[in-house]
Image (cartoon, rainbow, N blue to C red; front, side, top):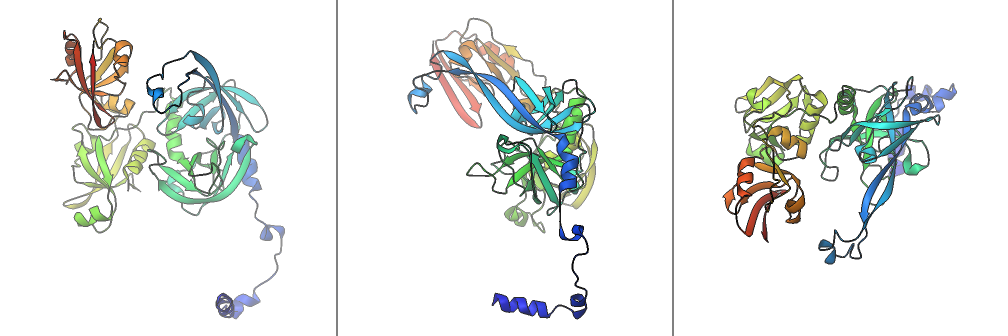
Amino acid sequence: MFRLVALILLCATPLAAQTETRPPASTAEISLSFAPVVKSTTPAVVNIYATRVVEERLSPFAGDPFFDQFFSGYGQSQPRVQNSLGSGVIVSSDGIVVSNYHVVGQATEIRVVLNDRREYAAELILGDEESDLAILRLQDAEGLPALALRNSDEVEVGDLVLAIGNPFGVGQTVSSGIVSGLARSTVELGRGYFIQTDAAINPGNSGGALVDMQGRLVGINTAILTRSGGSNGIGFAIPANLVQTVVAQAVAGGARFERPWAGVQGQAVDAGLAAAMNLPRPDGVLLVELHPDSPFGKAGLRSGDVVLSVAGEPTNTPQEMIFRLSALGIGATVPVTYLDEDGPATVDVTLIAPPESPPRDPVTITDPVALRGLSVARINPALSAEIGLATEAEGVVVTAAQDLAAQIGIRSGDVLLAINGRPVATPQDVAEAAQEQTRRWAIDVNRGGQIVRLRFRL
């Protein structure tokens, strides 16, 4: 059957097309080579060797499913050196290098080796674990080859790309493929937003370059989905637009990446939600809740509105919306198209930093009481952004737990709800409750969305 179909198709070819058939007239017509792109881009892709020292406790119960929880602090600690290998991309001739946070984020020593074997010591000038980006500055570097960044919003599925890095430590390697997906965000990948490619990416490629056929940086290779540890043709890269914004903040002297604050909670509009809302198709992000200081709310959006696009680019998931805002940066004023009960509308929204309101009013308990060593602060949007709390979080959060506070089981990030039955609304409430003269204590906390009661007796 297949041969018959093929024969019919051949016979259906116009006679004029058949008579124009001729042998290739030059080598260029019979060969396809990425060599020109490779030659122009590989000098700007580097190998990174990172070292960090960690304290490791030796315990005879380590790994035991039962006793390990009781003897986790048992045994003498000793330092252990961990080495990691990855890749990076030079984006500025004076030695600014982009890599992955998981490669160099906790490193105590970083060495960068160029394609021509020159070596440089490097320092981390900005690291952002959420986006998995790290910005390095090479010491005493100048006149280095650098890659230009492409507008990643222009990338389309099917575009040819090359992945360049140092897989498995074998040396700089180039693999080819296409862009196989855009706007990827899954549970496995965390909170990010990625370009998907089928170009082979393996361990060691992390932090390397994904470039187009003009030699421009499309993204920074960061992750793969695999069961074997090797490439299955499902690799992910951080889009160049976000890379550009993070680099700009690093060069400007920022110690951490500051994202614009939306002050909203949203969910993707799926088929069921679209039907319930009488929408023509599942599209956009439904705003479930808005903070009173949200710039979206001040621009006129309300709970129940559906955000369709930001700066002319679609937003079909909360992750995609966060990416759009992060790539645009604080201070930008952008058009936001949304759908409300009256139909589609567009307003300008000014992107702001998370506000420090209400004030944090930090308190650290140093008196010889049951909660000695506890540091708390009032939750506000800026603090929530720093430690990863939900937009709607309020009350008092633990910023540090040491000494007795750590021994009774309080952890950094716990949101305090009540102490011995007394509700906690401010840091001063905690300070007053800590002075209670009693031997029996009960502390209620919200830990990762679960209510936990800590009971102890002095």
